[in-house]
Length: 258
Length: 221
Image (cartoon, rainbow over all chains, first blue to last red):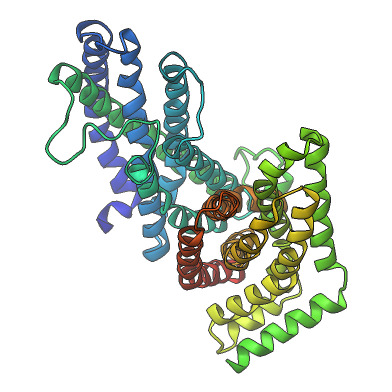
């Protein structure tokens, strides 16, 4: 695992993974969306509204998955000081926040016709909303320091504290008597959903995971390039080599270079 | 233990000499609570219905507002650095400071709470439970808050940031705190809620000093 902490090794691995991730994402999302929106039967109670679920449920899974991933990366960066784990945790936060927001929005769109209300203060919904707040707090904290290193460390500590919310989200439907229906896929005794509805659900979940991998790799690459540029600019300030491109004057960096 | 008492005594002395801090917290609590009758209208039965929630939310906000001074001044004048270099475990320092924070904010809030309950027309059956629930709940607030206060040291706009970090983590205390009072008002036993709050308190007592000390080490590094 520590081998991949080296950016060059990671970048090589990422270029190898990238085409596969793009292919799998496009394929599973295309097939999954076709099955979900066209081929799968309408629910006998919910009618066509049930199709919202094919986005809602995978988005909820991804929201939780990204948070756990972020916390693991945070722990790795605190314990082993992997620079890449830091960057991965930072890069995961906005993706996870988007999936969580997507889950909440699709959920309320489904809730309006089904429950007759956009929002209820039910344990599952509320704990999911707190998950979104934790993401936002993490992103605000990470960017609040002049020293990015300090920001990621503080963020990692917060991400680890916030992990306590993940089991609460998962088990909220069992612990409290809620309006939100209990788990029907990952439960003892097998899923209680018909295969014709289970397949599109899984395909879209795989597609979302692939999408996460793609965006994660892109964001990590971007961050690594940004750091490289910053290092070059900093080392370029001291020298006055003829013909070299002078960096644009930036008071923040001029201060750091002194 | 001696060190704990020394830190506690120092922080209490500072809080008393700087004077207005804990009075300000109570004043904030009272003013915030007073806003609700203007907002939702003065009907007695509506106020009685929402009283426990309003008091808890105001107490949460008051406890949060005073978090900044737990570590901030010590961080600025270098005391924190000396404490972290000393052989004293930083977890103990955190515990002492949290205790001082609770004594200067949590305790005054508990005393002020029944007064606001009367003004909000709450049934007197809930007073005892309200104070008991706050007695168990507010130390947990101080402990959780210490993590946030330690994390934001050296950050830009720390005051706004701490609200975003700490308030989501306060929600369990709010749920069970308000739930206990609701149960008491309905004549049901409130013991379960108080017990869960006790569990939260024990959990935070065990974990929050570790997390906050970790964050302090990051800050003074």
